[in-house]
Structure formats: structure tokens, C-alpha cells
Image (cartoon, rainbow, N blue to C red; front, side, top):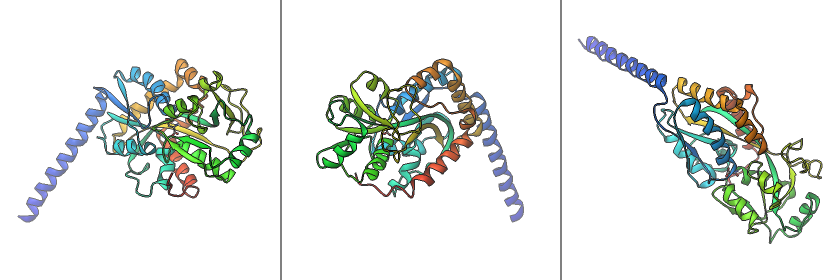
Amino acid sequence: MKLYSRMLVGGALAAAVGLSAIAAHAQAETYPTRTITMIVPFAAGGPTDVISRIVTGHMAQTLGQTIVIENVVGAGGTTASARAARAANDGYTLITGHMGTHAASVPLYPSLAYHPQKDFEPVSLLAGTPILILARKDFPPKDLKEFVTYVKANVEKVNAAHAGVGSVSHVSCQLLNSILDIKPTGVPFNGTGPAMNALVGGQVDYMCDQIVNAVPQINGGTIKAYAIATPERNPSLPGVPTTAEAGLPAFQAQAWNAIFAPKGTPAPIIAKLNAAAVKALDDEGVRKRLLDLGSVIPAAGQRTPEALAALVKGEIEKWTPVLKPATN
Ligand code: ASP
């Protein structure tokens, strides 16, 4: 009797699991049937926001649904990432993360409310973003060598803008500052969109940031760029020397932005999102906009969820021994 009732319960459970699998499959087949929210973990106008808007604009056409960008700021992008990790895993809430939110935050925040690997499904890498050393246009040093001498001599009075602890701008300037053995005052913003406005307005001295929103400002002469921290110059900024050319070869930094979904989002939905992102990255208009802003468009093999999972793993391994829990 006992065995029989257990069999009945077992049968009912199996049927329920089977039904929910069928329901999930049906849901994935018709996905998407309504608006998708893309969380951007920084303020509007910064690199993460700009890249997200360019790519999701095209993805929305492919998917036949609107993708709304929601800027959720705070704590170097970790507030938004924690929220995305807890969102329903139905494909209607996604996040554009980056090297900070999905790698460097792990060693920097000992009680991080999410884990980039355990709480997310990788969807697709969107762009590589070289890092530049930037300054307000009237900052006294005229090249990188003078910059190094100047910030070392004036460390008490210079400040560096960033987008919060664990952001790309924070982590890359931490790296630069450790090479120079200085600890200037950090000035946090909700993203490097507003940080760039402060740099243009002369309210902060320097910043290390992803190339994307720097290109128009550098070309417009509203800020200075001392060097790009990649082995090659960038075609969008042919006049900006590499850190090696400018005398600081030890400073090498490149970031990236990528789409993630909450863990457990059904595989067919991830596949649809990935296909839409890949199609966007192959579109001439999207490519031109990304390239004009200095981004590096990932090659086909770098756009798969598996490649993004490997990138996140590698980046966490790279940053964990380098970064200590941070306080500024
Ligand atoms: N680039 C920024 C960072 O420092 C964030 C942003 O995209 O606004 O992480």
C-alpha cells in the first residue's frame, strides 16, 4: 500500500516535471511575446549604455519586440547585477555586464550578492573596449611622461574619476596607480557618462576608461588622451600613442561588455538571444557605429555563450590575485 502510494506520488511528480518541461519548451518556442528589459548597470551616456543601445536596437528588430534599457546605478554596477541575478529566468530581463561587474567585482566585494558564473547564463560578448588614460583638457602635463612625473609629485592634490568600486574605470586606474606607486583621491560617479561630463567640465583631473565615450570628446578637443593601453593604436584615434610608445609599456588594459541572462533561462531562449546578438554584430550599420567609437568587434568564435563563459572564468582568475577588497 505504502509502495503503491509512493508510486502514485512519484508518477504525479514525473508528470508535473514533464508538463513544466513542455510548458518551458512552448514558452521558448514563442519567445519573445512582450517587451524585454535590458538592465544597464551604469548611468546613461557611458560606454556600457552606448554599446547596449547600439546592439539591442538591432536585436529588437530581429526578435520582433522592443528592448527597453533600464539604467540601474550604484556600487560599481554590482547593485544592478544583483538585481538581474534575482530576476525571473524567462528571457525578459537581461543585463549588459562587463569586465568589472562580471569578473573584477568578485575579489573586490567579499560579500558580493551574486556570482558571475553561478548566477548567470552567458549570452554573447558584444565588444572589446581598449582603455585610455584621459585628463581634463587643461591638466598641466602634455604627454604621458610628464603625466607620470606630475601625478607622482602632486599626488596630494590630484584626483581620478571612476564609476564606483569594481567598475572598469576604477580597476584600470587602480592598476595604473599601482604601477606608478601612487594613491590619488578617487571620485566616484554612477557611470563614466557623468564622469566624462565632469572631466570635460574640468571638475576632475584624470580617468582611465573604456574608449567608447572618449572618442568624440578627444576628437572634439574637450579632453586630453595621453595613451591607449593596448599593443596597437586604435583606428578611431590614430593620433593617440600606445602606452608602450609613450613610455609606460607596463600599463596594458582592455575591457569588454557582454549580455548575460539570469541562471536557468531556458537554452532555446539563450540561443535566440545569442543569434540576435550575432546578427547585430554582423550588421554593417551596427559595426560602423561600434568601430567609429573604437570598440573591437568580437570574431565569430568569441560570440558563443561557451566562449563568454570561458572569458568570465579567465577574467576572474586573472583579477583575483591582483585585486584586494577595496575601500575607495
Ligand atoms: N565604463 C564604466 C566603467 O568604468 C561604466 C560605464 O559604462 O558607464 O565601468
